[in-house]
Length: 132
Image (cartoon, helix red, strand yellow):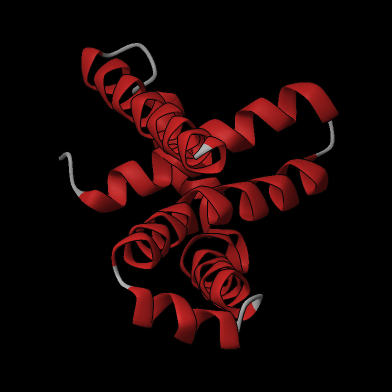
């Protein structure tokens, strides 16, 4: 049961639960989860863009023509897809309740660990790209 959708739901679940503990308001946690998990899911696009700019001078010149749109369009599209797949009509509550039921299992722990590795690796790669 370790499909890509399961990890996608786990990413949203971890962000949602983190902000629910901190904010104590469901609407704030929902909004933060939509925005932050959309950012995490769109970061690979900016990483790919950075590598293409580094190795292709023509791609760098073309991307300078639409500088801000390179980062805004993937973020907005992933955000809309994220909202319509999981958060539209409160579908996230059902998915998160399923995860709450299996919270004490080994499968949940493995999935949570892999999701944390995904988040940390994205942040580290972005930091390395910013430093260079």
